[in-house]
Image: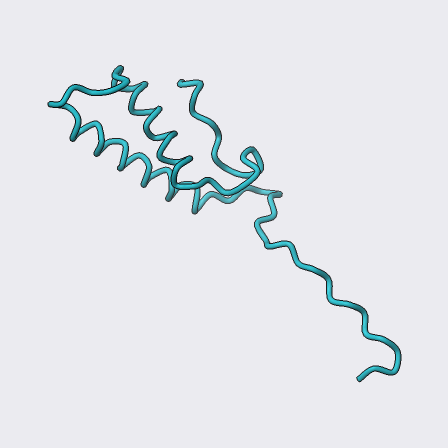
Length: 87
């Protein structure tokens, strides 16, 4: 597989993947599979459509993956302890 494609899910990626991250991975995949770094003009439309479709599928995958043991909850600040006698 293409070594330029990086894992896009936490905890491997310390933050949520951005649309730019997802599109870059999709572009690398299409380049690898097609064998073209940049397609000829007559292939541009199908090349770009493939990148878009793969980026969409990747975004859906990342949005629905359940990673066991990973905490996707926002970090909460603990509430202060009530003072004695306070209402």
